[in-house]
Every structure is written in C-alpha cells, then in structure tokens.
Image 1 (cartoon, rainbow, N blue to C red):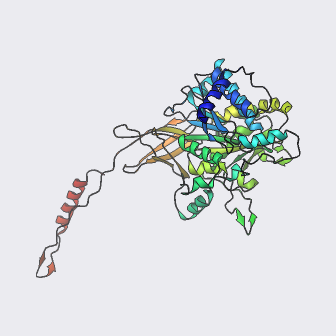
Image 2: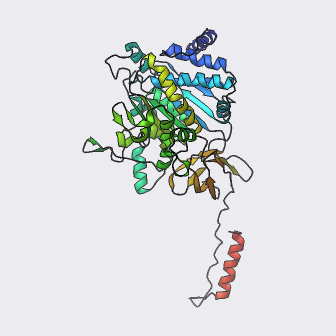
Length: 478
C-alpha cells in the first residue's frame, strides 16, 4: 500500500506546477519535485530511480542522464556524483540540482559539448545520500551555532565512517601478496552498515561505475585516495602520512585541457594532476589558500591531510572498478542562499570537466573465440598493482595517463592475452581482447620400465629424443 501511495504522490509531483530551479535551499519534497521536473522537461535523456530508503524512510533518489536512459550501452562508461553525505553539508546537494537542470537545458539548446557528453556517457546524480540529516540541519538553518547538527544519519552514524574497512586487507596484501582489487566484503557486512550505506553499496554492485566524486563542505580542496594512512593508529594516536594508491599518478595527473589553457599550467606532455582537473577548473580552489588552510594547487592526498577509516572514497577503489575523489567545496557547510549562485558559477565548469575525464585511457570488449562476452575478466597493466574487471556485457574501462603500456586480459579457463598499447591525451584507445579456451595439458601415460635380471634397461638417447617429439606433437603447437 505504501508503494502505491508513493507512486501516486510522485504523479502528483510530476504534474504540479514547479518553478525553475532557483538559488535557494531545497527541502526533501522540493528536491523530489525538482528531480521529476527535470525528467518531465527532458524525458528522452533522463530517468529518476530510487536506490533505497533512509532510516526514516525517505527515498534516495538518483537522476540519470543518458541518450538511452535505463540501459547500459557497451563501451559507454558510467559516472556518478554523490552529494550531501553529511546532512549539514548542503552545497553539494544544491549544486547537483543546478547541474541537473543545466544538463537538461543545454541539451535542449543543442549545446554540442553537452549533447556529446550525454550521448557518450551515462551519468548518475544522487543529490542527497543523507536526506534525514539534511532535514535536521535545514530546520536549524544557516548561520546557527550547531556546526555539526545534522551531520550524521537518523541513527547518529557518520556515513563516511560506515563502509567496510578494506584498507587493512589491501595494506596486508601489498606486503605479503594477495588480491589487489575487488576485495570481498565480510559475510556480515549488511548488518554492520546503515541503510543509506547499504543502499549505496548495492548501487555500486548494480552499475559498473568508472569515475565518481563525493561532494562535501567545510574546506575547499580536491582530495584523492587513500584516505586511511598505512599506520592509521600507533599507540592510540592517529598517524597522518601521505598514503598513495598504485594509481597515484593517475589520481594526481589527468589532462584537463580547458583548465590548463585557462590557467597556463600545462605540464610535460600536457598532463595535469587529477584532482587538479577539478581544482584548476574551479573558480578559486586552485589558489590553495581557502578557509584558513593551504593546499598546494588546491589538492591533497586524503591520508596526508587526516587519516579516515571506513570512508566511501577508498571503498570505491578497493571493492569496485570505480575511481572516486572527494570534493570539499565550501568553507561554510550550510552556506546562505545569497551565496549559492556564486558557488554554482565557481563549480559549473569543474563539474562538467570532471565528467569528461572518464573518456581517457583504454576501453574495449573481452570476448571468447565465438564472440561471446566474457564478464569478470581481469585487466592488468604492467607496473600498476591495481586491476579492473570487465562488466556483465564484457566491456571494460581502464583510466590511464598518456603513455605506452603492457596490458593483459585473463579469465578462468582461457589463455591470457597481452598487448602493447599507446594511450594518447584525447579519447580512450580501443583495445579488444579475444581469449581462447585453454587446452588441458594431459600428461601421456608412462610405460613401465623394462627390466632384465632386476636391472633397469637404459634408454638410448635417440629413443628419448623421439619420445619427446611425440609428446610435443600430442600437445600441439605452443
């Protein structure tokens, strides 16, 4: 009955006259109306769906942009934005609503940059991961003394400290050997996390996300993994230390052409540091001095800033194919409405440029000899100890910097295939793999040695050579 009522309310919202998105804070009902309004204005490229409910029963709504909404097109990457993970950090929520309307309007206006982005990319926008916390913070309002009011969910849990801790396992595996990607979850993980966290993890399982950003407030900096330092606690004291991933160069260096040209910061080979793609396209993040803090170029390794355990950023990297960064976007966690337009103008270009970064590196299909898709094939890059896997449709995406790489594809029951790939600074290089089934190596039956008077007969060298040749013929060509 509750689901029927929910559908009825959504229909009412859909047909209710709603004013355009304005620069104001949106409570939950306003947020829902805005998402359905955008879908109504751009029905051919949008879809609203829910990934679950909060503690208090509010839907966690996602707005999808695609030229075929609801369908994964092979070789088209999936990207996501997550806002308002901390309920009192409201700017990300408002930016996501502004971005949604902007994409819709610009597509309808035939802005070729936006048209191409939506045709080539499947974009998922979750404006609020913590709608319950937001309602608490919004009831207090901006400029009130309760700095942390509404930060946690309705159970009082910080959702960015609520994901399964996979860093401990990867740090052990790096020292002692073991898997370097898609680390498994504990058997009891569902009972250890909050409803909102559980919904997001299931969302990650449902889509083969390639790139993501998590929007926060309270500082102005682009933060990349790892968030948890290698020695998180020593004698009860949290250790702060730069803790890079195997993809540290990628997280730091990605070509951000428009930002480079605008700021005159081309590096060797036209490369920019990853978080710099956002920082240098942002209105002022790149300056470094913000909110009383200084971050060179407006970026930081998470663990070198402060060590954070069970965060969503590291979880994406260690459990899925997704590379996520955390964007701290405002000094004021809940900025006054009169500042929202300035914040939107400062972030708009950066939000678009970051989405465009998913189109780099290599991508392709992994197929068998009969051109059937091979899901969960492992794609390895020599020299980078972090693999990715192919999705359910057999397509894979591996973000890489420009350069020359040795790339291998492996799957159980198939012979591996290795190629050398040159990656340029523009669109991704297409690299398809066709894996052949492994031929079982059957050892020939050995003859019992002939004996005469209890002495083993000697095998003549010529006979041994012929026997080896026959074995080779039985095995076939190497």
